[in-house]
Length: 235
Image (cartoon, one colour):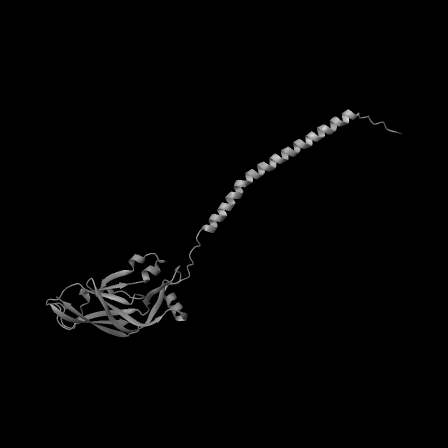
C-alpha cells in the first residue's frame, strides 16, 4: 500500500531552512560568548598562578644549616705569648697546632655542638683544651693582703671570649660572647672552647709604685701546665 506524504511547497521549505540556519547561528554566538567569558574568568587565575610562581622563585633559599661557626681548633698549646696592652688590659695569646679540617676537626666540632651554622667563619679559632685552673702570683708584695708568691686571683680579672653560649643557644646570643670575671670566679667554672687570646686586668693597684713581675699559670684538664710572665709598671 503506497503512503501519501504531505507535499511541502518551495516557500515553506525555504522558510524552514532559513529558521534552522538562524538557530544554528545563534547557538554558535552563544557558544562563542561562553568561551570568551570562560577565558576572561581564567585569565586572572592564570596571571595569579604565574605571579605566585615567580614570587616563589624570587624568594631566597633558606640557609643550609649544616656548617660550622668556628673555622678551627687550637688542639695543642705550645707557647703562651704576650700580645699587646689596651685599655688597662694586658693581652696574652696561646699558640700551637691548629686543626681546621679532617676527621679530628669534625669530631671536635661535634663535641662543641658546632654543627648547624649556616656559614663558615674561617678566622675564628677556639681552644679545644679545657682550662682546669688559672692562678697569678707576683715576685714582690702587692699589698698587705697579697704577699710575695701568694695568689692574686681575687684582684685580677680575665677577659675572654667564650663561643659555647652562642653555639649552645642555636647561634642567637653573639653579643654575650665576651665576658670578664675575676680569676677566682673563673676557677669555679669550666673554660672550654674559648678564644686563645685572653685579657688580664688588675682590679687594684699595689701599695708601692714601680715594676712588678707576675707569673700567670694555666693548668688544662689533661694536667698540662704552662706559665707566662708579665712585666707591669705601675706609675
